[in-house]
Length: 99
Image 1 (tube, helix red, strand yellow):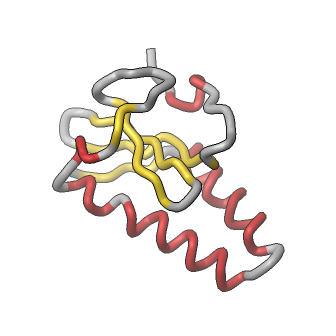
Image 2 (tube, one colour):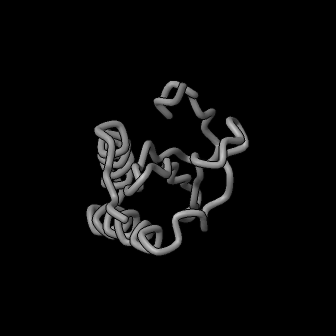
């Protein structure tokens, strides 16, 4: 399976990294690399993430990296990373781009 990143997911990663970088540029770079590295396993195990409680759809799932939720959709031959959110933030359903 191929992994595709939505523009929103990239935007959220950049926003979070900018915030982390106010304390430590090295920590921000490490966090960004960890985010990208953490989704690699989804190529082989797309259903390894848990169902997103806000939508409870089998094809919308999430994995966690520390306090952050990486929310993705499973499509026919690809995994689409929809957004990245802090676990304490409310998840706007519009971020998921689902019907």
